[in-house]
Length: 314
Image 1 (cartoon, rainbow, N blue to C red):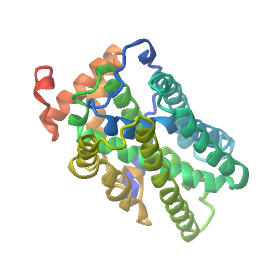
Image 2: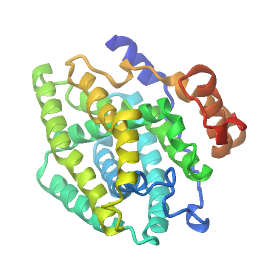
Image 3: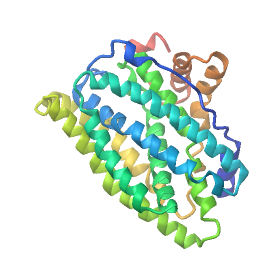
Image 4: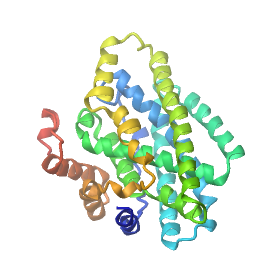
């Protein structure tokens, strides 16, 4: 399995796609995610940490470029850095729009920025790589869950959904790069030592960022005066925690394979889940058309059952 997964990681081309969604110039609804306050603020909590988090990833791997031994991993790392810079740019624009609704995104960015400043100052390069590897596993897991639950976005503004799935596709595309860099840098060390580093950084990351994201979520809900909106809270928990179960799958079910000593991100080969998006984008350069093609593929081959609103377009 490990040999096949490593082969896939060398076959997947990391392509930076310079996409501009111009969401700041559009009328984005206040509750843009399924017209629901609690659900929207959960996504806002994720959005709040994207720009600063992606920049941390870029800096971490830029510092490692000269130390990577494997030329194919070096090339993939360059692709990852370029993709993450574009993700940070587009999410920063989206965050400016959300801040216009009074969402205190700058508070969340400041908190995460202070945490990452501590990482940069006190942690070794290989420890930072361990954090980057588990962080990229979380984003790849979130992407995988979202591919399995496209219906979550049926009531969301098309351009925002297209932006998110551009991000999910590219997170899937480069999902093994951080892990491969860590393994490359640790190639002269013992397997046990590398595994211990992986588990330590995974445990600390879970213990730190899972409460942080959900604390930010509740903070946003409170600042918006929606803390007593029981209907919205129920709708959000039903979807995120139980129905689509985004949170349990992202942080638990999808994380469990990471514990295996033989784990590799491409042990789950979901290239087919993003192939339709990539094909149409390569032909048209249009992320909205690519997102439509992605929905069509999943409606035919996956578990996606579009709502009445979306059924006519799929």
